[in-house]
Length: 449
Ligand code: ATP
Image (spheres, protein in one colour):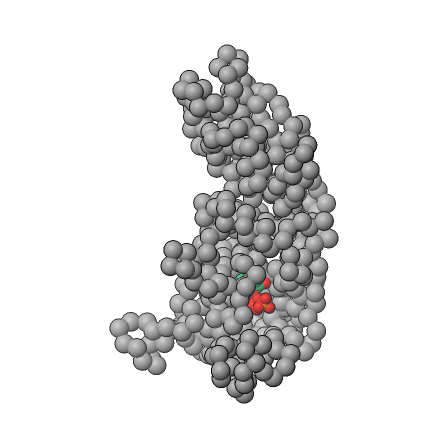
């Protein structure tokens, strides 16, 4: 059962330093969020796990990191200037702006005021490049990372000599002037995406579309998301985006209900054809078999970093009865946990603290490690459970004599005692070494206690 309510997740994130409201000391800025010391670790780990799975561990996908500002013609070619808009109405009384789709009646839901006629509202942020603010210097903050990949298609083919099918992956910030934001980091105006554009021979696109649906579902499951919380939702013909031949969303059972975590689209040859037309450059691929120049089709798995972070947090959250109390624990996959281990000296006494700090200095050379010497040991275990630390290393007075420490495992709460000299190798074995093993669907992480 999913015990996470949005209030609990937001409160935990705020309290423990995962995510803060942006500009908080100035009263905050609507729907903008700052990742705190633990949040940035979690978010980086999500991105690292994605990059490992789609770039490092494959031989058919290469990475890219393109500029946020791009030539404004790109947004004409992509259709964003014309089509990337929602029909909106304004309230003439309270000035609130609403998405027509979200309204039941024809008066303002906030003040019952009269509404304007619907009009299109472009979701791209616009600004000026250079010292002059005129039409010629207008640029946009990209609303997706994908276009940076399409316009580099030829560069990547020439420099990497990749053969079809192959992909290009990118992680980066995107910006959309969303009308309705909310549900914490689920929908904001500045967010990060993890996108793959996978180029295939026309005719093989259906197979590859199905392949990527499975592959991407398995990525979430392998990192601990419960299968029953994921649901594929194929788009009906009427809701398909202008570029898509078919599209399926991977929906996650968020506290507010099922909602999109990732979209997987078969974009056909739309993007390369459009950019060839608008740039005047050939964007074809020489097929070695037929000796013909072809325009590859594109399968696009497009995921949100922030929505993934939220899904991993919600899925990991649990409240478990423990004696007379409830322990709050984040069962995060070790690859995602902000700290892999935390060192806890039983007391602050100097001779004990010295040994604990030496251990801390050594362990943190290998993994993100915490150190906590405040409050009771039970309270400190709880705090580490709540932030998802897989292992606590407890240094007690006996450690001074027998040169051993206790390792306590988050999920089972079991403890073992091992020599300090074997600490790093034991943690390496338990954590799966430098590159964490992503388990197949249904697999559970064996802690080996
Ligand atoms: P939605 O229907 O929720 O607005 P979308 O279909 O417009 O999303 P895409 O254009 O397919 O989203 O973008 C791909 C992914 O980028 C989404 O699945 C989501 O994870 C992420 N994403 C899109 N918009 C936002 C946003 N405003 N805030 C956070 N993440 C977003």
